[in-house]
Image 1 (spheres, rainbow, N blue to C red):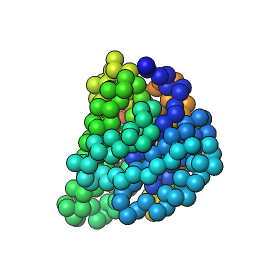
Image 2 (cartoon, rainbow, N blue to C red):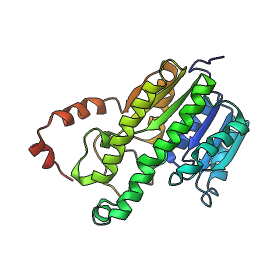
Image 3 (cartoon, rainbow, N blue to C red):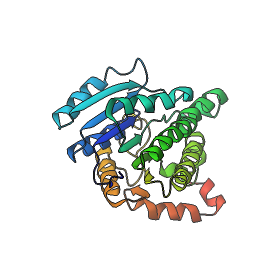
Image 4 (cartoon, rainbow, N blue to C red):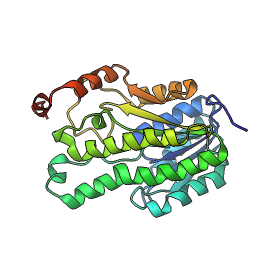
Length: 255
């Protein structure tokens, strides 16, 4: 039986230490989700005990922690299968893993750049396809993909990260097309600068937001059945301006 987007009972978070991902899960738990799986890298799961306790205090009945490493795509299907074994059908899967990296280092270290793209794009491709296969089999469920305004038009100041996000954004939308008519869908989330530990070393950009604001937007989009959301909404207008700027002007934008 296909469920509506309003009946979110089970959630899998890929990238269990992500501040944005955890904010989304907490928001869904407050809205009624009760069975949660947090997937994080082996050896880095200790901080999730506090997150799990917080989720239980907010109403989650079952919170499980499983292994997930974005850089080992051969294991991604097994992670999804383990989540299903623990909580049954997956109503929402949040793909929130990623690394920002240091642009000054990445442009001078091709190996580090490739590793960055492996996490930010390649890992999403393998994990996304594994999730899509499960959602199609269920006939319902939503994959929430955290894209970025950085992928709308890649700047030289973040060319590696931005290029990976551009690829992820295109993949996620096409995956949504692939799932059309299956009962499952993909929600692409395009935030701008979000105040998190990962972005703390980067100068704050205009229209900065918080993990909680992203979470509220995602929860509303799940209820509406939206395909793409900007956080904040005004960022969509700014992104349109970015697309229209001539290349010489774009190249001179501040780093």
